[in-house]
Structures are given as C-alpha cells and as structure tokens.
Image 1 (cartoon, rainbow, N blue to C red):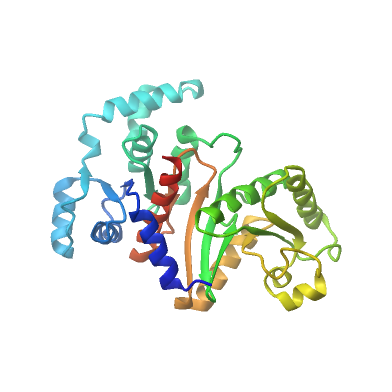
Image 2 (tube, rainbow, N blue to C red):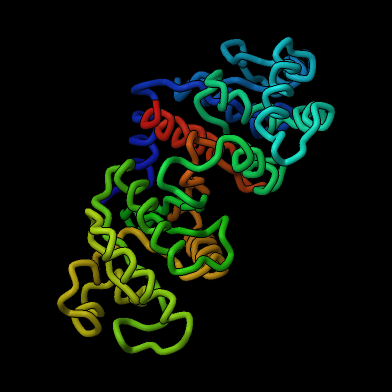
Length: 332
C-alpha cells in the first residue's frame, strides 16, 4: 500500500540519495525552468539546461526562479559543438550522414542533450515538454541505442492510485507489438517495477481470461506468454487475462482460481499501444487528483533518456527528472 504523497516522497528521496546530472534541452520552456528551480531546491539532481544564458536568466528573473545552481549551456556556441557534430557524423557514417548534416542536427537541443548523455557529460536527459515523443526518442535510438539483450524500446507508466503502485506498458512507443516484443516488454517492465520497489506480478492483458477468448489477438498474447515461459524469468506472470481478473481477487477466484498473479497483478502488459495509451489516460483523467501517472519511462535504452507529455505539469516534469535520475543510478 502506498499513497500518492508517499510514492512521490520515496521517488524524490531515492533520486536524492545519489544525485545524478540531468540535462533539460528545452530551456525556452517556462514549465521546464520552473521544474528545474524546484528540482534544485529539493536537491533531486544536478541540473543542466540548454539555451541562451541571457534569455534564461531574464526568464528566471521574471518568473521569480533561482537557477544559479544550474549549469546553463549555450550549446549553439559551445566549444564542444564541433566535437559533438563530428562524433555524430562518425556514428552515423554508415547511414550516409555528412558532417554538415550532423552540424544541422546538433542544432536541435534534443540531439545535443542526447550527445551529452552519450559522452557521459550528463547522466540522463528529460525532454518533450515542447516537442513530440519522436523528437526525443529519435536521437536516442540513433546513437544511445538499446542495452545488451534488448531489441526494442518501450514506454511504461508508473500508475499510483487507490493506494497502489502499478506499471503499465507499452503505452507510448510500439503500436502493434509482436508476441516476441510483448514478451520483451514484460521482461523490461518487470525490471522497471523492481527498480521502484515492487515484486513484479505481470499480467498479459487480453479480452479473454485463460481459454475464454478466441481470435488472432488472443493467440498473439498466448504466444507471448509461451515465449516468456521459455525464458525462465524470475517473476510471476499470467495470461491471457482480463483486467478485472488481474486486479480483483474475487473475480480471480471465479475466472482463474489457481493463478499466483490473478487478483494481485501490479505490472500490466497491454496487447497493443492503442489500448495501453487509452487505458492509462482514462484512469488518470477519471480519477483526477486521486491518480498519479508518471511517464513514459523509455525502457530498453543503454542510458536514460525520457520523454514528457506536451501537457506535462511542473510536478510531472520534476517526477520525470527524479525517475530518470533513479535509472541513471542503476546504470552508473
């Protein structure tokens, strides 16, 4: 059992326990600057902001913010700019990228910030308040790339409601995952759950429970379960299973009475992105202040780069900075 305030406090304290350097490439966003101010006050992380130092200082003054402890990088005029462009050109030369093209790409703060993470100048990056998910993910996929053993990136949300913490995936990246990808999503999301103190009990969701559902989409989930079983994973899982049977012990007694997961699931693997995204947003909006949705957490990358919803609040950004720092601790 964990309340929203308890979860947020635990997340902040975990980040503070071993401070990491988090780069925020959207220094032109008021929300990002406000979040940076609060993150510095709470000592969540060491903050690097990309942008024009004069403009940022002026905005900070107008908004009543103290960003004096942040490292502000005028990246378009930085001495490292040419080095970073050369590195990008070298990393992407097999794809035909020229140095001139690399210079143009490095003028994008998301590319520059990702390169700082690649080179170890920053431990993680948070972006997306003003730009699309694709804008954040693209450079990470191009040169941060997936960690050993991973073949894909998926997007998970930490969902805190009804005094419970759950993890939903994939709600952000892969539209129509294959059975192999669903199995990989389950493994990486279980790892994410453990990182935030959960003993993962994974539900492969479907519109049928056990043998009750028929159809291609159910068969896809059944195959994902079979593949996961072959991996000899160290967490409990069940599927296909409906959401009610996954979370309600009374329903579970009727639909799947001998399952170690049914009625107690805390990790939910959705059959495709449309369902996952709709479900997390429906719960978030229906419960309002009684639900905290943190994410998307980009799983499977070599180093932590995380996306923000363009509707993210200042609190959302602070929480994202915090869990990016927690991921960076693990990879450090």
